[in-house]
Length: 297
Image (cartoon, rainbow, N blue to C red):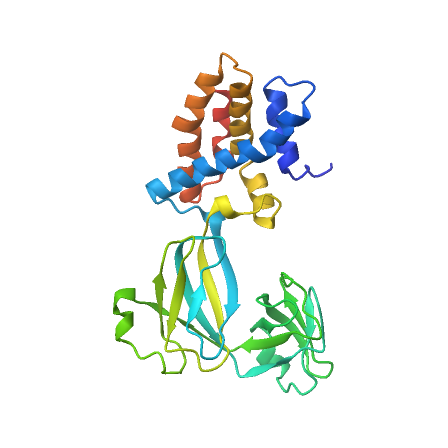
């Protein structure tokens, strides 16, 4: 038996429009659904999330960046919404790769780490091709210098990729930015604290002390759904995990579009019950599939 097809934005929209009795779907309606209507549903999700301080597990993300010697100000991730947590990554074994692929990287010819040391360590690409990609070393050949990684790098490294084998991690402590002016920014050392400033959209954070060498930063935070590309990997996951909710939302919009008599009822159902129930379940780690019965109410 063949596995079910992974839903896409187009398949979700088509399913919803068929449910709304569109037999021959006009191109204009399909386009509106895949742009305007899907964005309205995303807005409804984020408005409810922000209003009720819900934390949706599917919107939790881990990303990486690297510091620059002597620079203490860094921008928030471009899709940041809330709850930034920073972990400082350091490593004594650094170099420039000889080659790279999605699932492996060939370390510098002078690299002297052993297999016992390398396996299990995280490796972070600090410059060049694949910068900010990170993965865990699952195997290492000290003769060929080839390190296999799992999972694959998000962007494959190459012969110009700088790397760091992470051998120490430490949580940075969040501090009140109003106290920041009392600090001496000329002090260069390993950062201990970070000071978040500005809004989620245009915000940044300040490291203190100012980095004295290149460090890695692991950033954990919740994503702003409104700033996620519709064709991104995250959205592809959300199309699959939240399919029922997307279909019901587009179905509601389609009924509104044709002034169907049931549009008011479906709109009230979506905003008063379906969306809040979905978000509440998602925030508490319960699969949305548990609520599929509501689409037939």
